[in-house]
Image (cartoon, rainbow, N blue to C red; front, top):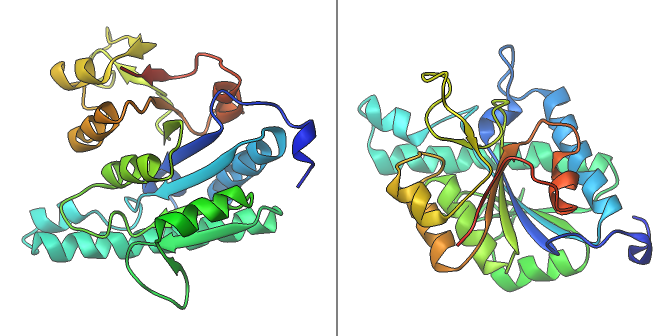
Length: 246
């Protein structure tokens, strides 16, 4: 990695990036190598350009959704644990591409599986970040009935991140006044408070995750993960996507 003295100073010195499992997939593949490579390249570029530490929480919607399993009659806890295991698969795939790009990366899992990931320990995670390693948090929160949005909010607070950045893959890149797929008159919101998102029922994120961020005064940026250099633009202070803050 380049010398930190030559790097830009970002808007936030530590970020938690939430990447949905769907972002890893294409119509042809559940885990698309080119797509993961693009995400990894973006993260490597951010680390090279900015004096910033990066934690990542990955979802598993490309492989398995606990709510879908429960809806099909499966025990909800069992279905959620299956989803947690699926996040580890995505985390390992992302780690591989990041390290091929020269970025040291650690996968830490809330569910213990010592052969492939370190157990999640908060102080150890912070130490990895201080040593310029990217940390990919897998296994959700380790508990059923909680989404990976909530896991991301929890990890962001625990590692003392300055912001939680939720990258979407739909191309919409933000929070809208209504579902733009159903309402053509829906407009994107540039900035909004946590409480307004909750009260207006904008469905941008799990309400538990939103409340956790609100209670800890943690800003959220909802943006298009696949947009060119969007993470870098946000760290430079540009208005990309929607900023949620108290």
